[in-house]
Image 1 (cartoon, rainbow over the protein chains, first blue to last red):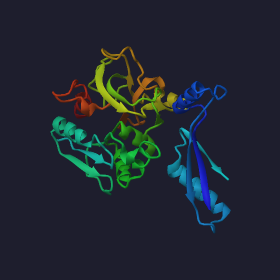
Image 2: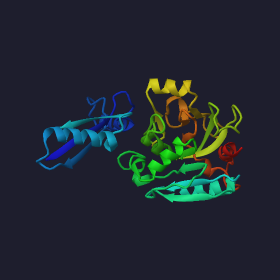
Image 3: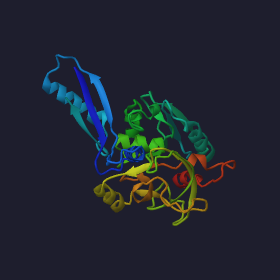
Image 4: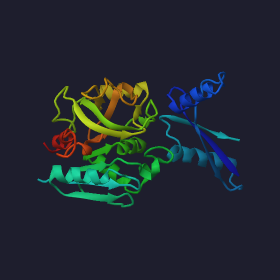
Length: 79
Length: 226
């Protein structure tokens, strides 16, 4: 099964890349776009026979150990 | 008694050679260069985690290096009350290991900063002991992710425990810039609670020799040796 993990900076932390993207989009005429923030998507494969509990536990553990720095980031498993 | 030290090299470190020369020239003692895959560290007084782009800065700056084999030994070295100094990428690695509080995020203005900067000491520790209060040091920076961030609770702890070692300040050629990268309270370097681990974004190893523009970086090693 394909796993998608969305990692983003916590809401209160300044995300300067999103600000620059917003300025560019605004100058291209997309003036209704605001509060743009950029994050990252990590995709990986897990064998289909991994149980739901084990899957959740493994993803959580990988995020805490390496994929996410919980001082500045938060994550969400998609789908 | 001679002062012994070591520099760890990760794939992508690019200031390890400078750090080795800095230590050799200033300590006059034994200096070791240790590859990140080693599993033992000689008994030394000081370990430097050098600047660079370890593991290409993939995922987050310092994230991969913080999981290298040698890190267990580096943590033991620090727990043994010996000195550990992380410079630039080394500072990022120390926060990723969790030996230092907070994190280093993208510079506020999104620019890579490669220039001289000015810092002064905030709270006294063994790394800045020889620096006078209000003495302004000129030391180069070269980073993209040097914007120090921590939450308010952590910031209060850093202040109460006097863990802030250096802060950016105005200097002779600094265009009146006080905080070059947007760090909280212009923090340029912090220590752990026991004050034997220091992380700093400026590069003292690029400011010590006669051929450097400034020799202010000497003061860190001189402080440790004195």
